[in-house]
Image 1 (cartoon, helix red, strand yellow):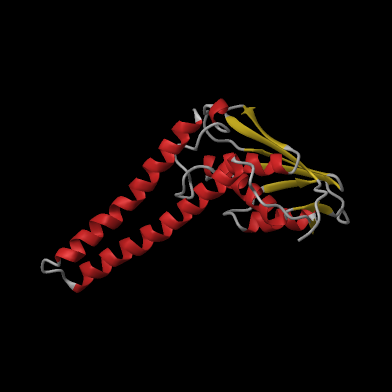
Image 2 (tube, rainbow, N blue to C red):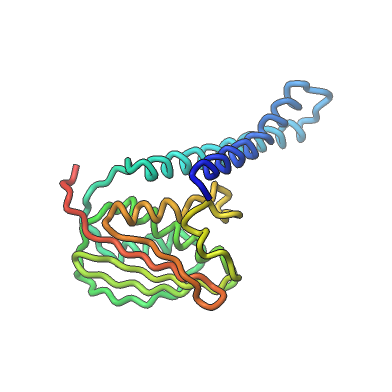
Length: 215
């Protein structure tokens, strides 16, 4: 899918999230014999959809900065095990993890961005088969971190996963999670790759240590 088509998709999804707000506001403005319960329901719709729109706008902004090569990075001292545990805690369920990293490894990278990247990968892999946790293997050296995630979800169009938004994002966002994760990996001198694993999907990601000064 071409870049222009991605922007069209984003615009369509933002308009779809805005529509319930416009409808609720119109009904409230008319005020035709609204009961107290109905008023509260309409107010709840506006509040819920406003929060959703804010998340979607933030996601679109992050993706655009990534596409333009404008993601800001800082070099933090990271314990890879703690990074992964924080990401697992931020997602539903407890995926099986095969961990091959010595406990005393310290990695220099942007902790916020790397967590953002891993959470997006975990959300994708976990959402493909909510009944089963994806398998995860992780390894590290002081200069390199790597993760492999394999889900057992249904067959999908592998080639499209890193070229266009997800069709049905599990987080009710814009489906840009893997695209942003790919950009973050590249900002760290690495790459995110996808391939088939039976009917499921294998995500392989590696990043290199940053050599930039901490702010």
